[in-house]
Amino acid sequence: LDAAPTQGISQQSTGFQPHGLALLRGQLVALRQNDDSGWEMAGAVLAPAGRRWAAVALRGGRGLALDDQGVVFEWDAATGRWDERPADLPEGRSWLGLCLLPDGAWLALGRLRGGFEAGAAGRAEL
Image (tube, rainbow, N blue to C red; front, side, top):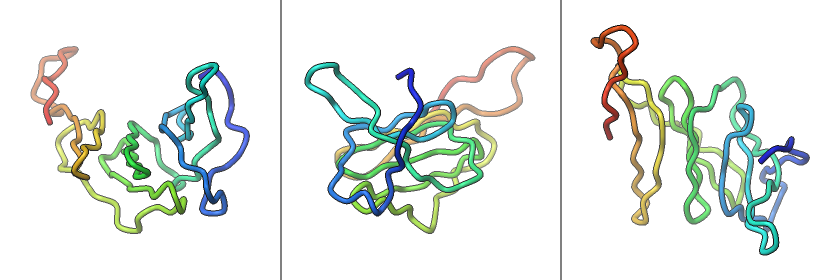
């Protein structure tokens, strides 16, 4: 995806169900699948302000966005609304990724901070 978002996706954007979410230059964008060219950007997702996003996930109209502080926000793609009570992941880890499971549960991938030699990366954990 080498383009800039052209429209905002919010609760006013009724009827649109994205097929995917992505991060583009630090901004959340909705994706749709195009039969001719594969994936294309549908527009910017109006996300909570002041966050540096680290990872996103989408399944069945439910989106998750992880910021660089280990806070996970839930997004309802049908309404464009964000949950007012984000989840704080445990401290002491650098959180790297998210996965939404078929049963509605989700996993976060993280790595322990500190305690490693300079330049050495910690083992990723769920």
